[in-house]
Image (tube, rainbow, N blue to C red; front, top):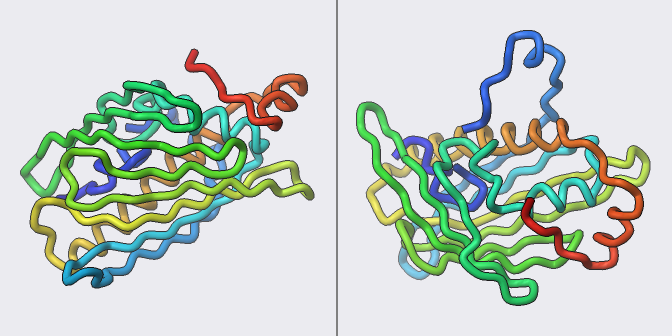
Length: 209
């Protein structure tokens, strides 16, 4: 399925930009790798991607953990909502659409996000249209610039057939598309007030607007 990334957490359409706005927005350079690996007699796709934004760590954390707003900027995500929260564990339901050539397929996932405030988000599949899915977002502050390095890694196996080499290329393209959309959105976010940044730095969990 083309755009397989939509079945991943944060991997689902970014708003269209006007020509002038697109020209002014500098997309951070991405580093992306996708490999097909064998584990327990099954073929998995192992993905790694990273990019740097000028947004501060608290701003990035707030944006990535406001799950109910993800469909506003993550490609091909139709909806994303929090089902429950228990401490640092959040159960999230996602709907999206996968497309391959002239075909399309609705995708439904329920995932568990385990938050380590201001540091990382670990994602695990609860149920849905994947045989296997695990992912991790890591946030690394850059003191020299006040920005943040955003690192995404994961292992996944769709529950539908994907040709080996073609699947690798498709997933790589979707990773680049998703990360470009996420990083561009982060670049547009206003900085948090210093008092809020301090509260979040001490482990506060942002509420959904």
